[in-house]
Image (cartoon, rainbow, N blue to C red; front, top):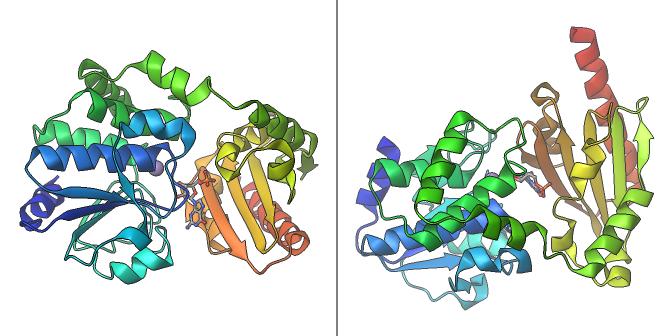
Length: 325
Ligand code: 5GP
Ligand code: MN
């Protein structure tokens, strides 16, 4: 809270760039849109910058906010705020080079190392949008219906619709306040979960059919082989939510999705027990995230090699925890 006040005071009259991570999810887009709108109400000129486009299902939450790609940025001196970024590399190499100095860092990742001048980081928060909602309420900043909708979107997507263990009483209190200001749960639910492209169901079929169990059913890994996106007329953004099916099987403690690419792999890990710390397992492969939800991207590693190393790391972690019990 004190850091947020310092950040606001330090913006000066420079234009503000609100930056989110590559392959943005609901919490990233919601945070960028919500913060940009809130700062504009305070009189600042604000742009949102992201390496990748707003995914189709999140367009409703972006409410016409214009997202600028790194290549289209002018060379003015921006006050730079990163949202939902555990580290300075998450927005991509280009933005790291363009913005070597980060003024504000608003985030909820346990691995966040405080890379900005003003860090508003709370790993207890279920979403960056939850942090922003709380800050807006405390600072008495304007929350109109589009801002409330954007922030609400980040909360429901990062909590798996209020189901994950990160969901707290504060999550509900802030969500109620956002609803009072115009967020519409039915609209958000429809836009996010009931407008899937038909190809996504084919992608889901292929993903479910690929499930492999390890460690006596305690680990479930699903794979999206190279070429499956083209065959199902989907893209990487359609993998959102798939990994949750791997974790949803009774007895499974760690669920994973491995996306094979010509030049490497992208993987998502989910667990139902924060003691497993999947963020630490992801960190062994240059990734990171949260105790129960983490991800990684490896280029230049063959999928078969990665799979073997990942299974070994996961099995070792379960054995370690068994030994502690
Ligand atoms: P997802 O599996 O949905 O892509 O991401 C889950 C969490 O893991 C996100 O909160 C994100 O911060 C983190 N994550 C995903 N991919 C990467 C990655 O390539 N590098 C790092 N450091 N974290 C990632
Ligand atoms: Mn988040």
